[in-house]
Image (cartoon, rainbow, N blue to C red):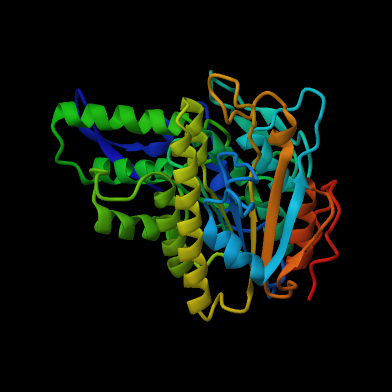
Length: 397
């Protein structure tokens, strides 16, 4: 358990870090988090890397040869697997085609499988109400939390909620671990406060920052991460330091987290939630196209690393899919939106390649986004029993 010194009228005393997490009261959960509630067999299936080609992207700038900014994806990776050019998000009445919703469609295999966990302006805070792939995997196999790993962007703490849902038979005991700049800041501030030596002003500022970070997620969960992840953060801090000026930012940060996690934590199921194309909301199209290129470069680095690593080589499946599409209306003041339920915001794609997957194939039929979760589950040897999508039977070599 992480503690730190805090000043009071009688000098210094140790403060449990959970005191800063307002409204938690989760002390009794420590043992259930550390110990699985039932015996499960060892996992012997393929590794799976899910890459959310996120921030909402259109087919034109990704898989269309006439306009792509992702040449590695289009010209190299499509030859290694099955391209699904006509994946769609169902046009639900009142549904929103956005990042959190699309990500949960992928993770649960269902639409509207979430509830509001206390949203703020421009900040969706959606909590899964159905099991995620992480929970299914750890429910069926004896895997540690860091072997089911989620990597999130630095400015989306609302996606910290995706580590587990609230379905009665799954939940926190089968959660995934999380890597994000938000989680690193929690780790770093806890270390700084434990190490001491701060001025009174610096101590107060650090405590306030720490409390604010913990308050971003007030669910019934202790903030402590596993020993494996704490070791990961210790190495990260030793390399990049505390000031935040040396480590990569944006989606380059996610790539760096991913390649280090693959080498150090050895996840069997990894999801990387790229997001930077969403900066196009500010109206500059180059933010969008450059972000697609950055993701493409990141994917190339990740694939190269897995190809060179015996643990992952020939035993890994990649699933690359956008969270949502984008509008194509060039007449609006800010084009490239995705909140208006237009047809193009529902039009996405997917690429699946790796162990057991047919090479250089195009699956030329409409496929629903909810098919991904049950298909990934089938590839890994379990059933996503609550998913409503269909398993894609055409992938096998």
